[in-house]
Amino acid sequence: MITYLKQPRLKHPQLLAAWPGMGYVASKTVSFLADALEAERFAFINPDNYFTPTGVTVANSLARIPPLPSSSFYFWKNPGSGSDLIFFLGDAQPPGELQIRMAREVTGLAERMGVFRLWTFAAAPAPIQHQDDPRLWGVAGTDELKRYLLAEGITLLETGHITGLNGLLLGAAAEAKISGICLLGEIPHYTINFENPRAAGAIIRLLQRLLSFRVDLLQLQVDIEEYDQEISRLGRKAQETMAGLIYPDQEPDEFDELAGEEEEPEEEEPRPLTEEARRKIEELFRRVRRDPLQAPRLKEELDRWGVYHQYEDRFLDLFRDERGPRDN
Image (cartoon, rainbow, N blue to C red):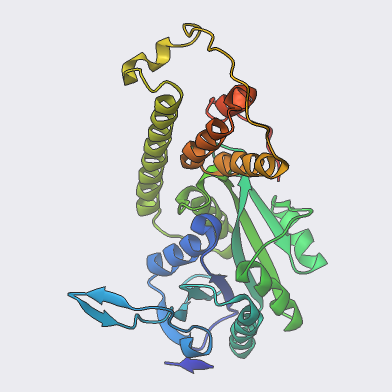
């Protein structure tokens, strides 16, 4: 159920909606815009219908039931010729079986407020580096919007899958006869668990042109610089950790001098590698490609089976500074 705090009268409104997802691209995009435009909260969805406490917080040795995630609507009146905007921000996505119900509540408000277009946002993991400029992709709810995106120079995502409510809302909008668009920003595979202001910034710059508004992007640039520094720091830490695992008896400043100086180790007969172990190793390789900090687990597993020498080239390739082919 939606509770209305006020009933704003809006001009030709468009709705921008977001829940947390990979790289927090959607929620960063909408929360930044709502803050930058000083949008006003006017409605919210009752959290009791979607969320149930599963534990307590403890402070000063006292247990308390934590507040439930909020799902709020905000509005901003465009002083220029562009549309007024409604922002929806969900602090969390409800359990899967309740997501379509929440999506329909959001589109129900959109119908009531006369929204003519709905926007969602998502991440597109890709083999890029965290300091690269991300490409943007568009997904449309109608053929007419496909032509609109192409006319605006936006590349269409031909195939794929948009998980969770950031994708599901497009389907609910189609049911409600509201045209919908999802914009996706590229993020590196290895940063899917980090908020990515660079991808959000690329989307925001596009939205400024498409929706006729302007915001100050200085704070966003600060966020991008801090993000770059943090990911670079974690990358260096991961490389040091890997070097310590591969060359445990060397000092850190000697790591760069070790290539070609090792004596050939005596070959030991490896334990027979079971099919289950092989599958686990392949899964760990996939995890490390997404998150280099998982590499110690992979090295430990290879050593446990005595097969590191068989996988050494693949293992080291994970940490070489090479760009792979880009994809969608």
